[in-house]
Amino acid sequence: MEITPFHVNVPHEILDDLAMRLKSTRWPDELPNSGWDYGANRAYIKGLLDYWGSEFNWRLQEEAINGFRNFRANINGLNIHFIHERGKGPNPLPIIITHGWPSSFYEMLKIIPLLTDPASHGGESDDSFDVVVPSLPGYGFSDSSSRPGMTNRTIADLWAELMSGIGYDRFGAHGGNIGSGVTAWLGLLHPRQVVGIHVTSVREPYLGEGVPPLSEAEKAYVALQKRWDDDENGYGHIQSTRPQTLAYGLNDSPAGLAAWIVEKFRAWSDCDGDVEKRFTKDELLTNITIYWVTQTINSSIRLYYEHKHNPRPFKKGERIKIPCGVALTREKVEHAPREWAERTYNIQHWTEFPTGGHFVASEEPKLLAEDIRSFFRKLRHDP
Image (cartoon, rainbow, N blue to C red; front, side):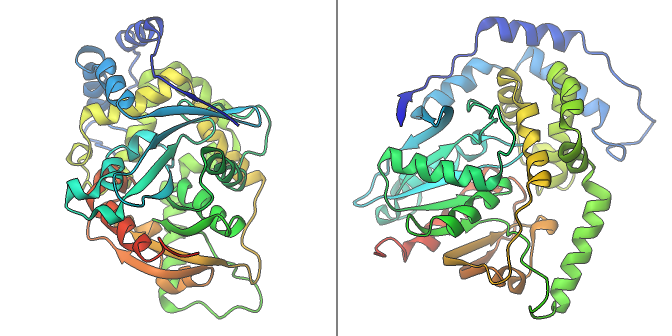
């Protein structure tokens, strides 16, 4: 595996083109006083784009990203971007941290120093980690696959190879959203390499013949998921069926891209309807700009299509046997009952955060980092 240092430096021409497109946005109409009921609110998106074009400084954000040690690894012809920061402690535990959609590696930047240098952030140096934060294939500065079939399971195999290529024979793994799925596959497929997994959501267990009936809490959770699918999952249906059609608009219009992404940051975070209670405009726009300058919105949403058309549910009796930690946020659709998770995960650690949502690594970095430290503390010296 070839690993080379990577420096983010977006060409001026791309930023100039973005500025031109922001100025020439053609705005849709909107019903009076409709707020966010029909989707992204026009007044908010217009204000965000005004800021994007007049005050947002990508070069400052670029400098902050380059303050971390960025690399790219060529894995079977696919260049994977990742950040790799060494821990400041006597025996750092390697850990790979995987983001989801519509975020990026950028979501994880706040927790990196909390994990690499816990002694400087209210923790103990014995809890330090060597942190690896990759960009999913087709996201950010990672290449997208030129062939169909890139799924969470495939990505887990890439991550196992990446960590071996860096030099880690044993490591932990954490993930949220799509990253939780990748992390679950790491635990299932690579138990000799992975000491334990820590996730903020759990996959659906096998529910066919021969398993105990659902508890009342599990039945309520299934009903909640059905309501969420009806009310909230329109994005998922189109991304898993016709992503290419959607991508023409999102890849061509910064207004369309911003609206598509920010609406989810507002809906899925613990923000009580005010997205800037959790994220500054600069944070929102840095994530959006990463999608824009890399033109990866299409390859990112294509992952939904691949999952739908290459399904691999848990099989009867299939179980993640290594230690599993689960930390649930206030995002209701991901707030599974413990007995639901225990059908498939070897739960050794269970936390229900009082605050935080879908993007918990950015919303509540201290809570998440402390929980990751706590879970892996007892696994550091396992053979």
